[in-house]
Length: 151
Image (cartoon, rainbow, N blue to C red; front, top):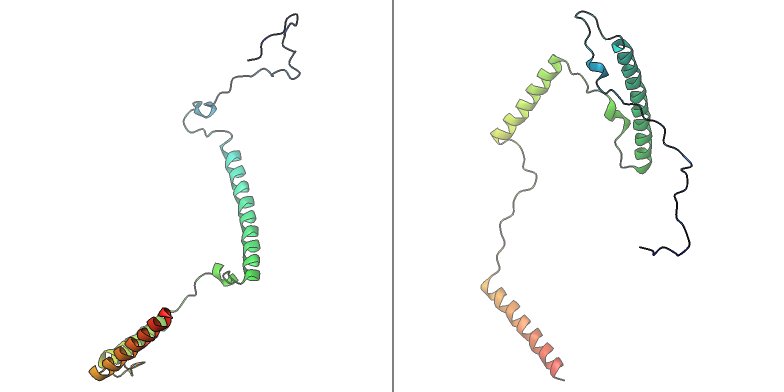
């Protein structure tokens, strides 16, 4: 705190922006009772305004989607524009044909008529003589390394 100076008087300056008078707000205006069968007079207007706001927001969202898809197409990481298209509709007859073809494919697999993609090789093992040769070569390398280190 700053000590007051002797001979100096302190007073508050008048507020350059006076506070406007505040009127009380009634937040329960909607709770006003209406007789049965009579709708709120502003209900239709409010509903219409909400619908207009929703349509404006939808247009804005569509614009954002277009910009995003355009940027993604530049980057190459994005999804193609067909992502927003509805799924294709397949007729019942075509679905039956596809089901029959899939069942036939599985029948071939279960019958063993399918040629395997790559036959599994037998596990290879090394003979005892081969292991002894590898161990002797490793001992010789270490012997040579230690000899070079002593020099």
